[in-house]
Length: 136
Image (cartoon, rainbow, N blue to C red; front, side, top):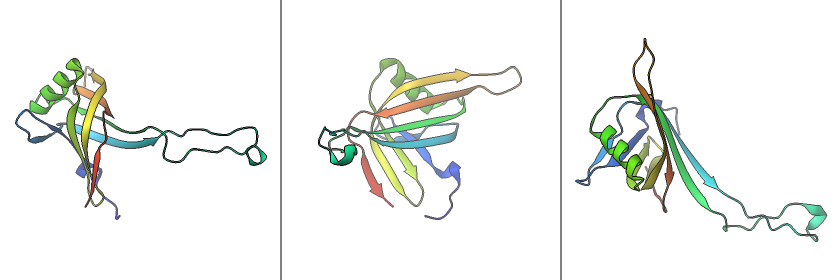
């Protein structure tokens, strides 16, 4: 994968009509894949080296981002999703890599603003089911 512009990574939320809308104003985005391990080390493990149970841990995806508050249609979808604590379908597009689509719940939604600056927000999403990866 060649170098890419960070702004080309997109986070989209599906609206009530089934159309993916780009979450407006995001300046930075992160995507984190997690796989928790299950430790099965026991008293007879070879020289007390840790042993892990392959494929048994809980997997998850986390999405984070922050940017400027735009008060657009996607902001309303995000805000409603947070207050309802409902799982909404999101699509994350990473150029020359692929896309991840699945249900996510917003665990953090923070708004901030300074006297001499723009209003900003930060959000954190966690997967609420198995996401689908599609390579590009």
